[in-house]
Length: 305
Image (cartoon, rainbow, N blue to C red; front, top):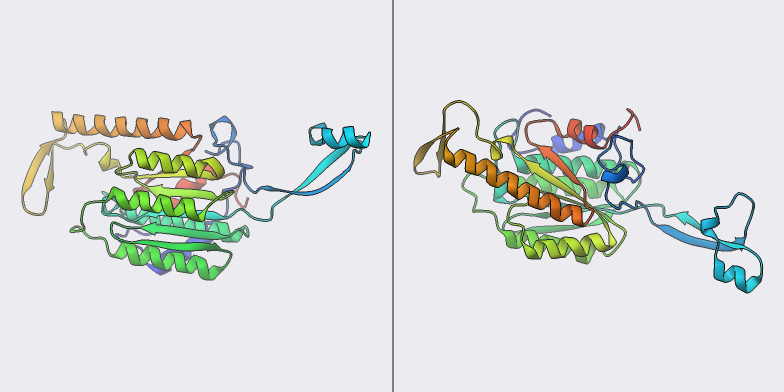
């Protein structure tokens, strides 16, 4: 996707052709972010009980129902089948803090691209897809459905809310972040995959409590959207900054720049530890690089999988 400040509906729809090669399901390629011991407790689709029947040679002994075996005096196993779907709920940040970018695009647009890509992928594998898209003064809730119309609805709302952002937007509100998470806890009671797509600006104790509730009965993937200039000032002498009225020059190797980087890394370490305690994996997404390439590198396997 070409460089842009605000995404268009056409650009988000075009992402449906970039959905091959990665998976949001629990059976992950060995190098995937979600594989092995680095993964969360991603369960994928749940299991439905089908029948209780006699034990047969080759059955997994772990499926034996010992109470039924004792009662009937012969070995019985419980048979389950995998549910046909696992709903996916996208929680996408479009607050003022996301309207920042030093190359290619902004954090808000990168979040919209990631959400659209995940929505198209979810539809492609036959699962229901919904979204909660939140700004500083508005939250849009789209209930999960398995339809192209629902994905287009999500893309349309992403474009609309992203288009409202500008350099004069009010500072980001943490209240709407927590409100969006409350909406998610009401909508996704259990067995959903919830993707939190945000820069985590303003997360607090309430945020952590709500994330804990979500992770208790659902799979959660934290997508951390960042811009390199939000980590470290660019090299090259002085960096000019402005609040819209006054301009100042900050030395890239001065104490302010060093404190800025130290504070960012401290915040990331704290966030990583909190999410690790909940066994929630983090998918970092950078504004400088194309979103499909980053997702494929983190979650992908062989082409065409």
